[in-house]
Structure formats: C-alpha cells, structure tokens
Image (cartoon, rainbow, N blue to C red):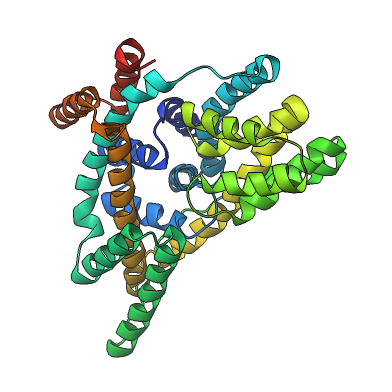
Length: 386
C-alpha cells in the first residue's frame, strides 16, 4: 500500500507543472476518475478543508489523500514523495546558480505548458461543479465569493467568511430540526507512529548555527503562511532580505523563478533560498522547515474530518467552504487563461491552438493528463518563443 502511494505521488510530483490548481486537477483525474479512491464529494471536502490551514494547499491535499488511503504513514509518504522530485530539481538548479549566477531559460517550455494547464483545470472545474454547487446555499456562497475575488478581496477572508456562514447556518438548522445523532463512522484502528518532524525539531539545535537559523526561520513562515505560493515571496523578503540581510532581492526573484519552472509546490523556492545561505545543508533545512508545519496541521485536521464526516451540521459547513473554494478556483483559472492567451495585450494564436487541441484530447480520451503536460512542454521547446 505505501509503495503504491509512493510510486503514484513521485510520478505526480514529477509532472505537476502549472501551480496548485493544476496539481489539484491532476489529483482529481488520478484519484477520482482513474483509481476511484475518492468520490467527487470526498475530494471536494478535502480540497475545501486544506484552505482552512496554513501552507501549500495542493501539497496538503496530497497528504490528506495519503492519510485516507493508509493513515499517518500514508500521509507522510504521500507528502514527501510529492515534494521530492521538485526538491531534487531545485537542488540541481541551486548548485548551478551558485556556481554560474544564472538560471536556465524556461520561457519556451512554459509557453507550451500553460494552455494545457488551462484545459486540464477547466475540465476539472466542469466536473467539480455538480458536487460544489449542489444546493441554493452553495450556489449563493459561490456567487458572492466569485464577486468578492473579482474585486480583489483576499482568498483568506473569503474562505473564512464562507466557513463562518456555514457555522451560522448549521447552528440555525440545528435549532430548527430535532437532532438525531448520526451513526459514528467506522474508522479502522491506526497504529500510532512517531511523526518524523519530531526528530527534525530535536536535531535542529545540533546543526551549524546558520543552517539552524534557516530551519527555524522557515518553520516560523510555514506555520503562519496562508494563500498562494506568491505570498511566500513577501515573507521571505521580510525575513531574509530586510531582517537578516542574507540574500539580495535579485536572488529572491530568481528563487521564485526556480519554483515556477520546476514541477510540484512553489514552496520549493525555499530550498533555493536555503542553498544560497547555507549550501546543501541550508537547502535541506529550509525545505524541512517550510513543509513540516503542513504535515502537522494535516494530521490534526484529518482527525477532525474523520469525526465530522457523519454530521449533517458539518456537511453544511463543508458545503459553504467547498463553494467558496470552487469560486476561487474559477477566478484563478480566468487569470491563468489570460496569462496563457495574451502576449503584449494581443491574442496568442499558437497558445490558443494548443489549448483547443488539449481540450479536445482530454474530452475524447482517458489518457493520463500528465501526458498532455509533457507534450505541451515538448511543443513549447520546439515552437515556443526564445
């Protein structure tokens, strides 16, 4: 079981270009459609829940899926394997950057990948819609969340406002309808395991001073960061450019570029920053620090979700969160489409053609979406702008 989880998430981590929304779409294709480990409703519940905790949402979704399949051990294996391919690539790029001071150009490859990402995400949203917009309450929440996002209200206030509304409506329903306790869901006993993160924290004081400082700084950031990976840029600048003066603004921007040009979570930008500060040890310490809080938060959240799965009131709460999450995904998809199809305020005919072909292939075939991402990258390398 754990080997199967490791193999699948290593593969997904190696091909998950395009940001969190693309990662979520790939996971839905893999675990709802192909393997049927989860229903659409279960997948939406997990995706909505990760919006309530700090950290990289798509990586935390991978952890949740691993937990559903094999408990805490599955959680750690899924999360680590999803991060690992990006970690290796970022380590290689960090070493090259430290030696030569430049990054390989990836503009052409991303030109081919971006339209395919829009097609994959669009297909996933189309299939999410019935479960996310199941009743008038969910539809109303989605409309309000969509309008709020369009006028630039932050995603964190939107999600927490939807969660608060869900709690209020659930409480009102509980007062109106006599409560008959739902049968407690049967949970398989889980063998307690010592979280690997405990050993990382205990070992931190034994590391060289600069490496230890990198670990604690990123542990602090990983414990409080909400929103997209780009929010990480502001946190890293405040900590490592302004406060500690360990890297330059140019290095910070290059760190974000590395996160964009590699698959998997954008949070591996932390790995690049760690390398520039403390070499390989700094890179590994930064990676451990930024991702460790997510493992802990998901372990805690998974227990609550398991206990709430049979509660009608919890269902109302999750429906509101899911609807708001769905609306935010629609807005981000619109932004991705604009970035993919517009070049210097003009429509990019080549990108639109790639999108149309990818959408047709996704609709007509049941092949793994990762294949179309790889083909998009190949087309970009051959035909894309230099």
